[in-house]
Amino acid sequence: MRSIKTMMGVIGMTMVALGSWAFAADLTDITLPAPRMEGGKPLMQALKERQSARAFNTKTLPLQVVSDLLWAAFGINRPDVGKRTAPSARNWQEVDVYAIMEDGAYLYDAKANSLRMFSKVDLRTVTGTQDFVSTAPLNLVYVADTTRMKGAAAETQALYSGADVGFISQNVYLFCASEGLATVVRGSVDRDALAKALNLPEEKRIILAQSVGYQVAEAR
Image (cartoon, rainbow, N blue to C red; front, side, top):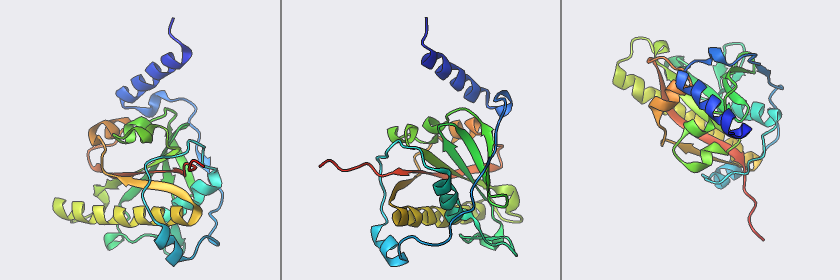
């Protein structure tokens, strides 16, 4: 008889293969705590300590940290005009930030400061080709919705969406440096498999992914 873990794995992969979140019942959105906009290390120190890491402690990130991180990445810092912590070409704000964690997959809603769950399946393994993505507590996936980039040619869409994701991922780097977290932005992604798992239509294109977690303690 198969173990419960094996059976759950089969069920999970079947759901991913179906490419539909309609089969994940009782989806629960998460209202994030208000992001903390004070504290942290000075900018020059954060820049000095900014680095990529490819090993992560598997400890779950508290919701407060997730909220602070997502706000730093691409949250709304000027509510009166709806503008963000990272620039975007022509203010298209075409980038969607997906948060993939052990308990499911979410879309960050900056206006509502919430995570909109669309799958209860652990999709972390599909977010990249490196082994560590399956155990990192948080994998961010940056998706450009080209329908928001009105009047732009395909090559212009690619250029600007790539640049805009670069701004967002650097915000994540600086936040992680400030908070003592580990992160790495990644281009090694099977985009077709991940787009299928996220049930993305053709006009939504995966640009990059980024893993985040606590640093692995050094041996003493």
